[in-house]
Image: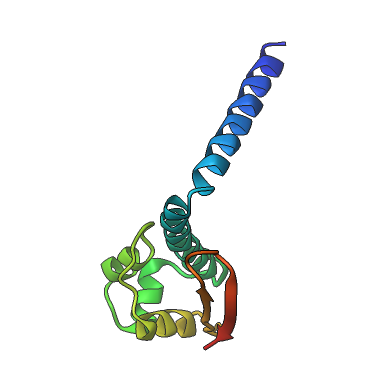
Length: 119
C-alpha cells in the first residue's frame, strides 16, 4: 500500500514536470537554451558510453590518444563544451569507432529544420 502511494506520487511528479517543461519549451528563447544544454548532455553521455562499451578506463583511453587521464575526465564531464573536432575525432578513433558529425540548420523564428548535412 505504501509502495503504491509512493509510485503514485512519483507518477504525479513526473506528469507535473512534463507539463511545466512543455509550457517552458513553448517559448522559443527558453527552447533554444534547453536544446543547447540537452545537446551537451547527449554528447557527454555518448562519449562515456562508447568508452565503457570499448572496455577502456579513462587512463587507458588517455594513453591511446596521448593525453592525461585528467584530460579525458574533463572531456567526459557533463556540461563540458570546449570540444574541438580534432579532439573528438581522436577520442572516437582511439575507441575503434567512426566519427561522424551532423549539422542541423534551423530557422530561429519558426524552429523549422532547413537542412541536415553529414560532415
